Length: 577
Image 1 (cartoon, rainbow, N blue to C red):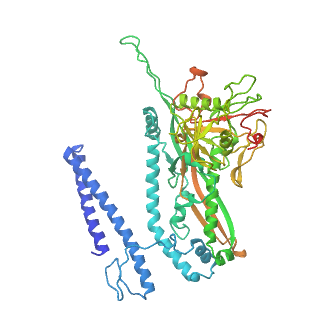
Image 2 (tube, rainbow, N blue to C red; image 1 turned 120 degrees about the horizontal axis):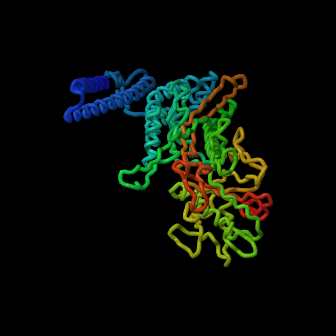
């Protein structure tokens, strides 16, 4: 059966199901409701209609791919071959191609960016010249007209699923807050700027395999971002809203039979994550692209994408939330109780070590060991869930590897989580590393990230912050201090939405110099403060601390800020590390 006939048959079957649905709906309207039998019939026919619609789309997409293949064969063989859609036979081989590799697929040997530059500059040799480049771009555009709508639909569905999964472990109060928020007309994904809708036309969408695999380029910088709960950012979204319960409901004893029932009204609100743009560009001479034996445009694209990863993770540390930046865990480089648990170990006593607070009589008080335990404790008793990971700069980890106890035994013993050793507080699981999981400390995995800022000042100095571009190997411009913090948290609480990477190749603005400008950009949103509100958590000290629902902490910071911190353990520069 020809494709056209198959599509017609499927459409007739679908129309028949829709007609029956109309009859059932009319009956339900007359009878003011469905009977059990009619309800089951309605659900089955509705499912049948959806299945038939999906089959029609699948067959049409396949037909379009086969038609392109037939056109390609006809061009090569002088108009011979088979017309797949109509089923008519052409003179010649008559081969039918069911699928074909993408024009700019991996290993195709063709460069999308170079072809785009040839087309815009209206010149270029190699790989068939200008005519062949335009033909490839046209076929690539036809491919995208089929693939991009599918991807957009898939991303929207994934975004909604990830949003719903984020609340699977929520309390009933939080779920009711989400229902109240949506009933009030506050939707999870606000769409305001239609210009942010993903495009699928023309030549200006790069090969899909380049987009899908951009994270694989090697450069330190994304370890922290990968800890956050990653979700798909749907197209056309300008702001994301998450419900937040500020005061929970309450119960209590009924003093006497028939007496007043105790209670407390729930108060809810929501927090928002605005969508930001992370972008970069590089200009290149057309001669470099045209004459280089390498696909140099793809090298440029890869390097820009790698710096995007670096920049994204850096903003999640110290992004200010203003000037187009995401809001990091230390907004603008400020570590304070306003944005998280802040344990300031300012002890400056001589002989201070990791497990000894220093002084004439050795004591764990004011030691780093005690401070990290305090972080885990405050997180557990306010969030009511344990922290999941430590995040440290490599300086701190390798410093810890050199520390010993009072009997000169190493505190960190090489091994695995199941290889227990005597009196150990940490485990080195995999030898020397630059980034990623390195071992365990106080029962939690330690993630190393050289992108973490290490130059926080004690007071009054310049803070680490995100500048106009990434600071070389690292995202943040350094501060004027010498302190590196320790960070721990329940990172599933922190949400990160990422869109689909976009890129452009522009030659008009640089055409007078035979240059091409390559741009890469992505839309992202981050939410670090769904629970984070430590300034409203503390209603007492020690055992009397009370945490209101929706005002619990998700991460904690340990620092050793001191105006005269010559002996501060976390003054890594002072330790020679």
